[in-house]
Amino acid sequence: MTRPLSPSVHEAAMPPIITNEIDYWDHYAHGVTDKPREEALKHAFGWTQYEGHGPGDELLGDPLSALELGCGRGNAVAALALKGVEATGVDLSAAQCEEARQRWGDIPGARYLHAEVLGLLATTDQRWDAIYSIWGALWFTDPKRLLPLIRKRLSPGGRLVFSHAPAVPGSYGIQGMYGNGFKGRRVWIYRWAYEPATWADLLYRHGFVDIHARVEPAPEREHVGTLIVTAQAGR
Image 1 (cartoon, rainbow, N blue to C red):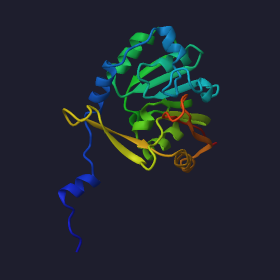
Image 2: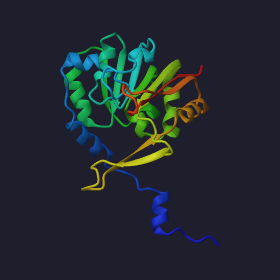
Image 3: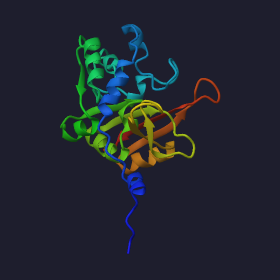
Image 4: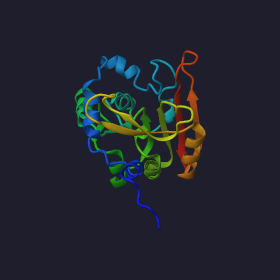
């Protein structure tokens, strides 16, 4: 006979559903300091955490339409729209979306949606030539749920590009972080971390091709680099 799990073991295996993620990201939004518009546009595609270091929007190819997952203040969406791309940003935080609309609402072709990424991708019929995430929602969403939806919503041959911090060696998969540090209310979120080869395998198994996953070195030796991944939707 199988013994029932003790409460502590059961809780570890089945973490409770987090219902305050929106509050977390709204709180984060209120702490963001906006740069002047010209400077924000110049550095909109900061795939790395080091300003002026690393590749730019050329990673997206030459899309006619693009969707950013976790657009934050919407700088990258605005920069693409100014180049004639029909650019959409989606963010879980209403505060971020409102700030983005106020800041960039005068730019034709830039659109900001307040929505949860999985819900949007599961219910829309729209397709995009490029879907991307700059230290955004892709880092904080289960890739086994998200990647099939992205693949479905990309045009044939469309590109997926994302960046975030590389995995800490020996620490992979789902990871938790407390939003308030180690004091105050228990507010936490999850993120997913893998080595480049594991990302490549996940993408291949979900119908992506021409996959390039690497860690961009930091501008200074022994500093934290940046995971950058590009892939195409298989035809």
